[in-house]
Structure formats: structure tokens, C-alpha cells
Length: 321
Ligand code: B12
Ligand code: SF4
Ligand code: SF4
View 1 (cartoon, helix red, strand yellow):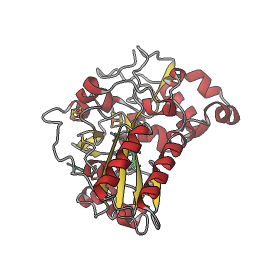
View 2 (view 1 turned 90 degrees about the horizontal axis):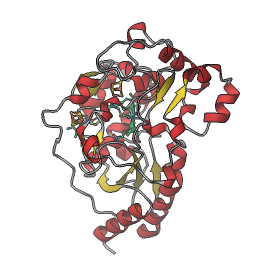
View 3 (view 1 turned 135 degrees about the vertical axis):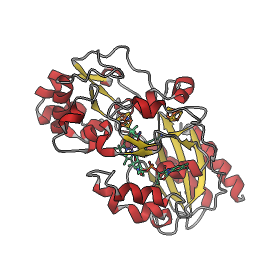
View 4 (view 1 turned 30 degrees about the horizontal axis):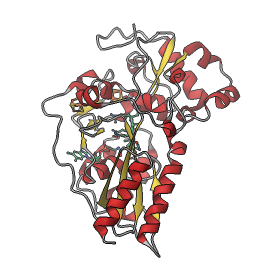
């Protein structure tokens, strides 16, 4: 079997395992080193110290797994429409977090694909799966592997499916043919995402100040949130989907996922604020420990719920009645 045939087998196995798309690229240094180092130097990663620690590997992805020469990039949709009008006694949860934690859910299908790559590669083949854990520059490698372009909202967008999907990767030394990069920018003159962000977190097209992003504030940031931002958090208590919800590519092409691996619980689309504020740490863990809400934990979610309860932004773009 040659490298082209092996790559074709890997892709058909990926689709069989429920991934929405699969592309292959090499691990040469990023051509966007400046974007990453500028972003870090300007402090736009906020308190995410791991982004600073991982910089050498993100710039040179060949350093992540010794001997690896290829990255197999995969996407998996989690899109499900929101449940109608938002009730201001409830806090909104981003679509990706309305089910089992995706790090756990995707482990099994990724491991199965890694096993297939090892089988196809033969003796001495290694294959290490990763999803949003570790220094893999996932969006950039996915764009290089032909899976989509980087939108002005910094998301990887697939012209057939929009952007509501996870990206995962497998780094391997198997000899696999690589795909052409997706070079076209399909955002055109649109700037809906930039205009819709309630906290003005985009400093420019494709430049996000995490310190202003609701996703960062509700999930990653541990301290007190500035008054100026609290009033603009639009009822979100975990993550934020606004810059994807307004994107025409999602309007046209995002279709509900029917994936048993990422099955969603509609009750997790929004949570009663009073209830979150009253839950003990142990009750919170029992109820939500299996979801991505575990990252901010009970304490972080109580803080977020309290902010949502006092929410009164009055902005035109605010979707909370
Ligand atoms: C840190 C991080 C965050 C931070 C910072 C986000 C950011 N925009 O950088 C915070 C906490 C804010 C965040 C929020 C979210 N995140 Co996040 N996050 C990450 C993480 C761990 C690293 C991203 C990163 O490297 N940022 C640094 C900046 C500088 O990199 P970048 O914007 O990706 O830009 C790179 C390339 O795009 C390229 N580049 C820059 N300009 C250009 C221009 C062109 C033309 C090209 C080709 C390339 C290019 O160079 C950069 C350097 O590599 C990745 C997982 C991973 N391991 O990579 C997930 C990841 C990006 N997040 C993801 C998701 C789902 C989200 C949220 C939607 C969650 C939510 N609903 O709340 C939001 C979206 C907010 C947004 N608009 O980005 C998904 C994105 C899937 C997709 N379709 O793109 C990822 C890939 C996780 C995953 N495995 O699925 N996230
Ligand atoms: S996720 Fe929300 S807060 Fe963050 S950049 Fe997008 S619209 Fe702005
Ligand atoms: S909303 Fe418009 S500018 Fe933003 S990512 Fe989508 S197409 Fe691009």
C-alpha cells in the first residue's frame, strides 16, 4: 500500500467512526508564528499561563511527539439549535458543553482511529490522539490540512458545515499523503461576528483579547470580573456562542448533530441561576462532574450565576429580555 492509499483508508475509517471530516498535514513550523507570539506578548492570553508554556511546541509542532511527521486532523460536530427565547432567571450554557465532556467522549473513537493508523503503518508506527489538551495548534493545522479557513472570529469554518464542531488530531510517524491547505478566505466583506460581540473582545479581524471574551471569563478566569464587563455578559454562565451564532455559514450549513457519542441533554442549554448559587460543591460535582462545567467548578459557576442574575446591559445586541 502506498502513502496515498494509506491516507484514503485513514479518512474512510475516520468517517466510519463518526468524524465529520478528516485531513492530513505535515508538522513543519507554523507560517503564522508572529500572530501567536504577538498575541502572547500583548497579554491577550490573560491568565492562561499554559499558552505561554506551550509556545515552542505550537511554533514547531514537530516537537510535540518525538518522531512524528504527520498530523491527522478531525472535526466532530456538536451543533444543536438553542431552545427558543432565553428566560432571564436562567443562565446560558454554550452549545459545546451541553453533554458529556468532549475530552472523555472522543477518547474512544480517537483511540480506535489511532489503532487503525498503527495497523496501516506497520512495525514502529506510533499514533498519539489529542483533543483540546496539549500544545497542538489545532485550528491552524486543520486549515493546513484543508478542512476550512480561519474566520474573522478566529474559528475554523467548514464551507459545508459551519463552525460548531470540535477539532481533534492524531500525531503519527506513519507515511501518509498530505492534503492541500484551504487557502481561500470566505468571510469576504462580512463582519457580523466582530460587530455582535457584546464585550468588544475582537481587537481586529482574527485577533481576540481573551481578557474580554465571555468564554474566557466564565470558564478560564478565576478572579473577580471587572464591573465594566459584568454588565455585558449577556446572561452567559458557561462559554459564549454569539460570534458563531451570527455567522452566515452557520445559518446556512449547521445541521443538528445526531451523534450518540456527543449526545446532548437539552436541560443543559440553560440552568436556573438560583439553583446554581445554592448548590454545595459536592452536589455540583455529582450533578455536573461529567460535563465540561467541571472546569470552572462549583465556585466559578456560582460567581457566573451571580453576575447573570444582576445582569442589566440594555445593549441592542443583548439577547436577554
Ligand atoms: C486558548 C483557547 C481559547 C481561548 C482563546 C481563544 C482564541 N481565539 O485564541 C478562549 C478561552 C477565549 C477560547 C474560547 C473559545 N474556544 Co477555544 N481554544 C483555545 C485553544 C486551547 C488554543 C487557541 C489558540 O491557540 N489561541 C491563540 C491564538 C493566537 O491562536 P488562533 O486564534 O487559533 O490563531 C492561530 C491560527 O489561526 C493562525 N492564524 C492567525 N491568523 C491567521 C490568518 C490566516 C489567514 C490563517 C490561515 C491562519 C491564521 O495563527 C495562530 C497561531 O497558531 C484551542 C485548542 C488548541 N489546542 O488549539 C481551543 C479551540 C480553539 N477553542 C474552541 C472552541 C469551541 C471555543 C469556543 C467556541 C467555546 C465557547 N463556545 O465558549 C470559544 C470561541 C471564542 C473565539 N471566538 O475564539 C475550538 C475551536 C473549534 C473551531 N471550529 O475552530 C478549539 C480548537 C478546541 C477544540 N479542540 O475543538 N478558546
Ligand atoms: S465568544 Fe462571545 S465574548 Fe468571546 S469573542 Fe465570541 S462573541 Fe465575543
Ligand atoms: S460572521 Fe462573517 S466575518 Fe465573522 S466568521 Fe462568519 S463569515 Fe466571517
